[in-house]
Image (cartoon, rainbow, N blue to C red):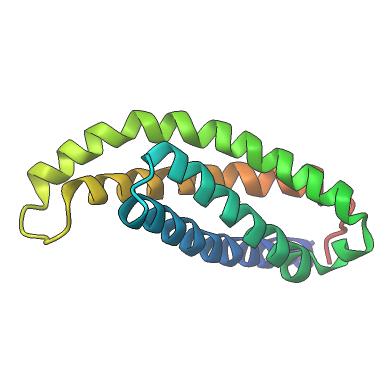
Length: 152
C-alpha cells in the first residue's frame, strides 16, 4: 500500500510541475496578447489557456503518464481536450468575476510597484483561476483520461 500512495504522490508532483510549465506558457501568452497586441483580456485568457493545454498534454503524455503513449493519441487528446474545455468553462466566469475587484485591490494596495494596476489585477485573477482549475484537471484526467494507467 505505501508504494501506491508514493506513486500517486509522484504523479501529482509531476502533474503539478507540468502544470507550472503550463502556467508559465499561460502567463507569457496572456501578457504578450494583452500588453503587446492589446487584445481583450477574456480573449487573451482563452488563447493563453489553449496554448497551455497543448503544452500540458505533451508533457503529461510523455513524462507524467509515459505509459499512456500506448493508448490512442486521438482518443487521449480528445479526452484531455474535453477536460480542459470544462476547465476553461470553470475558469472564464471566475476570471471575469475576479478581474475588476482585483484591479481595484491592486490600485489601493500596490501604489509603490511600477506596474500598471490593471496588469497586476489581471495576473492575480489569472493566478487564482489557474490554481482552481489545476485540481479539476488533475482529478478529471486521472479518473477519465488516464484511468487505464495502473499505479506503479
